[in-house]
Length: 546
Picture 1: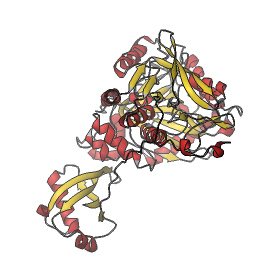
Picture 2: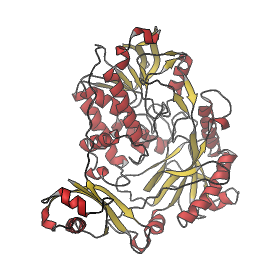
Picture 3: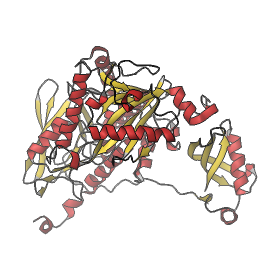
Picture 4: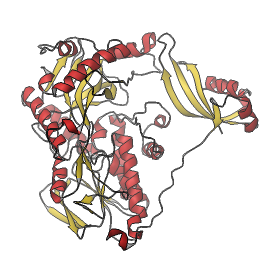
């Protein structure tokens, strides 16, 4: 097959137009193209009066491909190459079943890979199954009574289930193709394989994660909900089992020599337990900020001009980054076109916001996080969990500022830029389901962060006209975009107990500090599964560990 890049076509183009355009580039007749598959599809909106789709396609041609390649621009036409995931060789000889703690993207992908290899993993998830969890989340938003084990952060699918199902990633790991293929296999739209900004949507993602769980069980695995890891059973620098507590308070000891710690970024009590056990951790940079909301139609017009509202486009996306004078990088994160800001608390007495979109992306507002990076040197102290303490401080301050009932503090962009408390909302209605109160979010976020955000809003406004709309709303705080802790692991993906390697404990995914989104977490889960299957440490001479 041949791969053709940069085919630009109008928004109203039809499949036959794409075939005709491909044939023109190859200098063949359209009927000579026997098969055409989309490899990539994006939108070029740089010219607001001429918005187009840009395609990369793979084609089979009834002609000599070598001759075609010689006469075509090598930058535009190449031989198509494909990534085919090859499962790791199963060298593991232990009769014990591996335990996966957490059933977010990392835990799901790890458990699925282990199950497909015949290892019959046992999954421990502190939250509920996705259907029950959805009811728990909406009950919290309606009644403001938080279930601390089953909420936006905890439960089947992890925190990403109640976001946008956004699959953007900056990693280059080829395993991401397997992640996309697995999601499609279990119910995600086919388009995530080729769209430039793929997303599944919270509504569709719920079915995907349920189907993955059913497949793990069909293959011999076991998924246990309402089970919180409370201890590691360790002897001679090796895992011999885990202890977990069920919802009714019953404690269970489970024998295993392999535990995957796919905890997610909000399992602070579990991280505390691991730290007290002596598991080595270090501080890690993380980001904080606020959610900015604009009318969806406003963002659509800013991005697409007169083409806004075209049925082929849907709600507009954006992604921006800048480096204001205050020295810290600022960027937009997890943009949710036609979505909503959500209350994402998990501990009780904390206010945390995030963004969420359904597949249709057709709600009134569009939102994204505006985040500023915080480096460890700006943490309160050198303690490995100091970043967690900083997160918690902001969340508890926001809870009090909002009225101690999970109402979120929010501020008009115009007021924020002029350093004055908001007293009303205007043209943009905040969408947070537990409500928003006009406030001064500078009381919640550190001054270096708010100074940087103010500069960034003005810089971003020059990139996306109207981004600093005075009536746009900033809702705070967004503190859980990533973990402020990394559980140190070695070349075999296992962690350390003090100065010694701890055999059989595998930190994994975002909560362990090795990922920053659904796809990167899922890829890390696959890498950890491969390490367990290959069991390379077992093949090392004993002298290497003395």
